[in-house]
Length: 431
Ligand code: HEM
Image 1: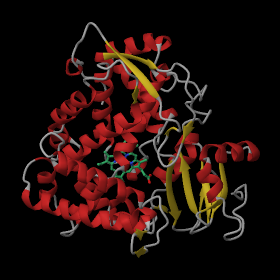
Image 2 (image 1 turned 45 degrees about the vertical axis):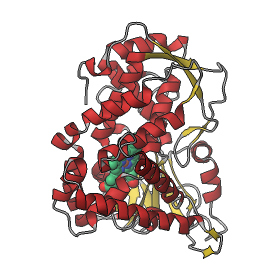
Image 3 (image 1 turned 180 degrees about the horizontal axis):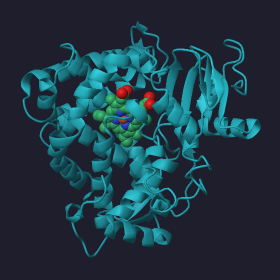
């Protein structure tokens, strides 16, 4: 067993959080290069932290040693979202996952497909009508919000436009609490972002409780019938599911998909993805590999242990970095290149080595929903449009926090295809 390379420094002064949050990709790349290894240590959130940037290390952390590396119960998510599955551990987390997974598989999942198709149609049907370029990230965020509120609360902008607007605005305020300093201050004419977020949370909880009381159909209905540990559990989880984070993550993936397939040079790839659902699936895997919406996740060691042969003391944090793991050259040759074919070539059957939706027993419970959603929206775009950047030359430099996307919102011009066929005509592809 060897000592972790790098230094965790002294408390406060040695903290590297600012450097990490400014540019997490450069932070990791520089240290991988300097130390010659993809597992190293530094100090993050004033805690000694091992950074995991290799596929092997990620599997060890999230799968083989998932009972040693636990979720942090004091995570910033807990301040804003209260008790829920994200910060739970052990038996409590297992039982919650067992119950909640039912919502995202089988009958429940199938019941959402009409809504997914109608939201795609409503948000994407007129993209070429004005001939003007479209700012794609806000477009896809709106689409993600319509999907999430329609699916989880039965609220849609045609039937109840004011309620839809109100919830959207409250979700945004609530989300800002996650990225603000956790100080609750309110004086006449001013209140801290954190305080505003807590007020938004209370209003959202009122709306959610009302829905849980009055609605019988759809997801809310299924949730009411689940065996959950206490009365507040369903509302706490609805608050999590309608979080602004999810539309942002979906918008991140859809934006990356649109950008990488844009222009005349990518026509052949678009045509192949249009005609072959397997190939579309490989394209979407490659989009998630290169541009994971979230930079990674964090765990805390509950005992002395090892990662990649390095000693990890009890109470050390471990941070897996999806961006770097997905570029591990041991597994992904030509890691920086967009090569959908790799998923039917040397990386065939290795989707389980990605971690854009986490991995192991604490991976994302919305995996299947995401797949259905991405297939429907990307299918709709491919069946109806060709597209290109407009103007042709734009700064597409990515920022990675809080959710990955180009720093300058990209503008895309869509052209309607002459031979139109509906996205719902697509034959079924892989899940
Ligand atoms: C593109 C969309 C999404 C992305 C990129 C994403 C990503 C992730 C990631 C990376 C994790 C693991 C976090 C960790 O390891 O600490 C996770 C967990 C989770 N996701 Fe997602 N997610 C998405 C959509 C969804 C949706 C639609 C839902 C449900 C409404 C959902 C619910 C959850 C929950 C409840 C967990 C926690 C699971 C646990 O702690 O056991 N996610 N997600």
